[in-house]
Image 1 (tube, helix red, strand yellow):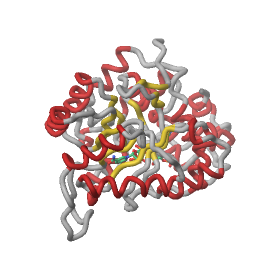
Image 2 (cartoon, helix red, strand yellow; image 1 turned 45 degrees about the horizontal axis):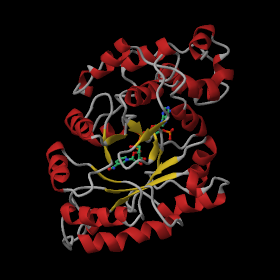
Image 3 (spheres, protein in one colour; image 1 turned 180 degrees about the vertical axis):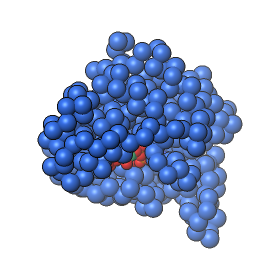
Length: 339
Ligand SMILES: NC(=O)c1ccc[n+]([C@@H]2O[C@H](COP(=O)([O-])OP(=O)(O)OC[C@H]3O[C@@H](n4cnc5c(N)ncnc54)[C@H](OP(=O)(O)O)[C@@H]3O)[C@@H](O)[C@H]2O)c1
């Protein structure tokens, strides 16, 4: 198994953890405290209160015994603040909310407003103006790395062409069915670290897909069984093994621990190819295996229904923690649950 570093060196020279914690879902201080206790060192938040709560992260850090200097804190500019002066005015709001004098990374969350996200007033300027502000913040040492999120390959190339300071990080949606290859290729050519979001398949819910096509995918389930890990760990390891940083989000300490445990197992070249080949697959074409016959009696009320929906195969680590007692009654399932 080829060893992979748990940190990446950005083109700024800063060290960044390859596995961080995603704070979307307006996660509160208790959950964030669990993530800090689990050992996460990178936290991905944003100024958009539609999805994130920066003050909760600040409170969780203050309540923990983890030092600010040991953490890597990323935040992102709300697109309503696009424009050079608006960006310079918005940035200190993150410092205040997080209770810190600097950020490790500050990204433009989106290249432009969309839907009702920004209200009726047009933004002061464009992402090009905001980039000049990010360059100033970087040069003044108020942020250690700068970057963008949700930029297409053409916008990214334009940014690289006009930037005095090239982006150090690009954050975009990437999962086994949506691999974002054009943007990753631009990043590779320019020494930019690509950081994936929603690697565990959550974006598909917004596209009307009724099950999680990543965590339930038969190819990931098969590989998970072969390496003795969960489908979630396989998806995250696949990304990291490609040199892509990840920021899984979870509300459960057992999942938080599982998503950090990616460096003591590996995927073979064949596993990597099998997952690479899922790019662009239509979730409608996925044939979920029929639920396994129920043969356990439940001690925990929900274990039977979780097992029926394939969780023994998809999340063996979690089932092992939460349902070992129930499934002890079932020799066949028990074997599957042994990690
Ligand atoms: N820049 C952007 O525009 C943008 C957009 C979306 C997301 N993001 C960032 O990326 C982060 C992650 O993306 P996301 O929030 O969409 O979700 P995600 O991390 O892809 O998936 C989260 C889901 O996976 C489950 N999960 C987590 N760890 C697991 C494990 N080990 N085994 C099984 N299930 C597991 C969680 O359930 P449990 O809670 O039950 O564990 C939750 O339902 C966000 O929090 C945010 O920081 C950025």
